[in-house]
Image (cartoon, rainbow, N blue to C red; front, side, top):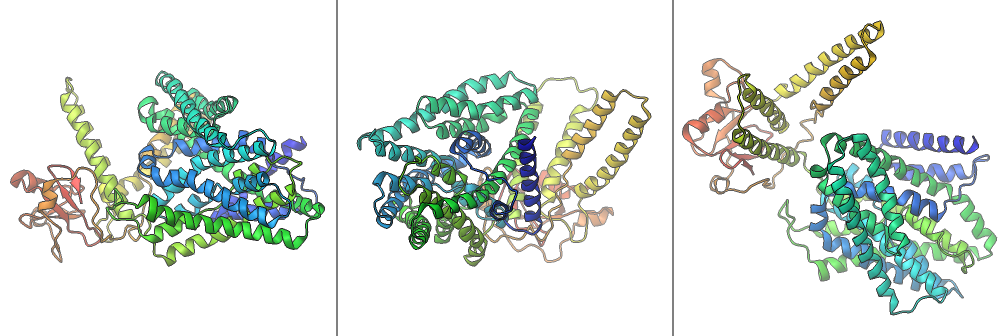
Length: 620
């Protein structure tokens, strides 16, 4: 009961602390560390000793897997050079740099112990960086590189740590260090790929979402244990398996299984990530007590901790600029077409916050190691220092450097274009199918797909102070569903209908409600972008008809003559005709294209800046 009570209390503190941090717009990881540090000094709060086994076997595999299945393999591959340079090159560079510093500052410490603490503090943890990055709107390429780095750098650091400890025990030769790393990384990748080959066919035949999700719970732990048992890298194995299974999920899993797995793993990752930072704070009291009992002069302890923290920050900045200008030399971004500026590189270097793996790895250092209590404090100082110094200043730096956040207008345009092209493929398949349509199924399918696409296009903006049709539909239908649900609950209360039937009806209403577009993005968030953005298939027609200044006060003449209303207006770039959009009742812009075959239109709305090709279904 005592253990159960402590675990429940831990969970409540994590949830309450995270909710409060989000309410006051403060980074939850930093707030939970503060709570943990304060709690560690509160009388009656039990001392929590975070062991390496708990983190490396209990927390690390699910956290890695949850991140890997949500990471785009395409984006990971597109940024593989900077990711590998950070996750391998930077970790080795930091290990050696910090090792030399600690060996110089702590008299009598062995080289293996100095290099061991260097490996411990080398790998950043992207949980805090990406959480802050998404909240303040860091460019997606930076977030992708940070996430990719965090998936692999733990493997490099743990191999380096184990090699240093083995060297201290006299069980390793210099030439075997590189061999051990290659065996761990290549062997780990092979095991991860083998797990993918085993699980992927299995999932094709598992249609029960509960069973499929249960399988996914086993995968990270089984993969990690198998890999570690054969002396490969469990981290690499879990990452490879997660990346491949996540990439192939649309093919090997049912839609219900994908939705269930996504929600479950997001919940697990949310809880474990925030619990980790609370646990970090709870280590403060006993680590500091151990340093006081160790006898090392306080001045020297403060000096070595402070300089190690500074070294971790400086070494990362040096490495990222060295890699940018001498090794990577980044080309244009595949989406924006622009070369990332130096400000991107600086932010990438500054977002080097450490996490729980650093603290857990410190506990792997043998108990009889010289200055072990000081080494533990170094790890804690680097974790807490980078989280607070870099974490709190990262939003300010992003604003100061004027780093552009992802543009909601570009996202809305890309979303609408992809949906339009998907619909085009769907209609092509529909025409290829042979069926007897005596009940008007074709017209019903066409209507539903058009409504879905119209809702996506309407996110780009509508006439000022006018509710878009999709927004009106959503608002009215939500009110109807609330009334329908209340009636079903009244029927359930009467007890005249079987509970299973009532549950099925309630589930149907829940599914419909979840499908409605309830994300009412404000028009202020969808701002105009001056940079050209092309999405989907490029075409010659868009190149032939560049953007123009549209009519100052546009009107749809056909709508005025017919006495109908329009939602938004489009201008033909070949003849200048103004017509209403497809969300409008009469769709005059599309009718104009069908009559005259003029391929390209431009939005005539003041808050929109995009063109559309009817023939190739492409946007710019």
